[in-house]
Image 1 (cartoon, one colour):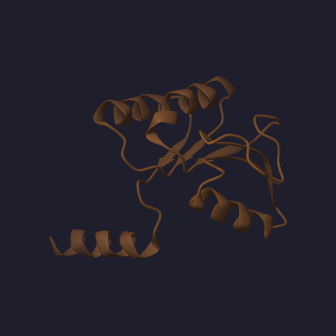
Image 2 (cartoon, one colour):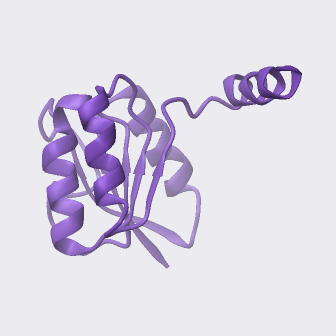
Image 3 (cartoon, helix red, strand yellow):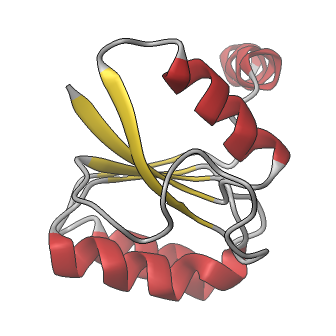
Amino acid sequence: MVRLIISGCNGRMGRAVEAICTAEPDVEIVAGFDLLGAGEREFPVFRGEADVVVDFSSPAALNALLHFARSRRIPLVLCTTGYLPEQLSAIDAAARQIPIFCSANMSFGVNVLLDLVRREA
């Protein structure tokens, strides 16, 4: 069983991740957090242990998110757009301590297009 924390759980993508995970018997959403507040969620905010944090929030949440994940040694999946160069450096530094997967765009179509452009170039 994978226990998951969703960062940005009240946003469109956070809710999409929730819907996908709810349909999977081997995934349990144990908590969520969001700059917009707790909202009406089926899971608690900042409670429970987790195996991974999936972030669809805001660049403004990055420092707290990195601190949270590093202090608990929890891997991160960062899917937020708009990081500044110094934030990308902070992500690189954190990746030396914990596993981090970072992609600014999780859209399948955009990633296929980026791959095709790379191949043509």
